[in-house]
Length: 262
Image (cartoon, rainbow, N blue to C red; front, side, top):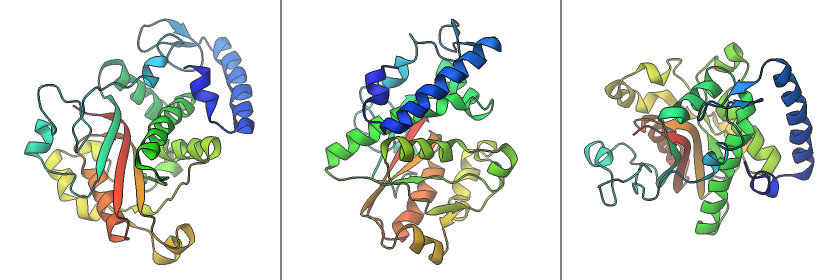
């Protein structure tokens, strides 16, 4: 990734921490045999993307997108066929996704989430911030980030959560305001449910935190926020969270995900 992009807006002290950490991790990775680039299969070090393929994450993947869900428009105009047939995102002002969930990008997300390749986290946070910064410039006001909460017990079981880690880098590196307003009730992994089951659980899977906790996080609801998640599949998770945020008094709820399932 271009250093001017990655370190351009980042906090200088945090940038130094990342640089030192990267050097140490590269040395360790070299002794451990390194990684193989998931895109071109070249040898690389601490992350499964080589220097030549890493900028592909920075480049926008879609030219024209659906005005509702953010999927790539191929032959459609304005709204994709998925949203025409399945009107799920009713509480979301607009949804944005950075890449399609396919080929090596699908493998990349798998490596990050399930193989615990946490070295990818600052790179994912960087491209999330870039889109967030662009959206704020377009709208003319700042957008606090609301993370989609993990299932109960996940952090205790795995030791980390990918969205929680993205928010850590966004806050420490770029000073993004994080508002953890939501909590998840269901312990079932969404990927194990079909679309009908996901939609059925929309109203009961997520809720606002208790009033006392909400008051500590935000005394008054902001005008607009951005929901952050890793991948948008049916949109049921984003819709459930957006609906709860609207009930809190937030007028505009945008969503931003790293990947979207076509």
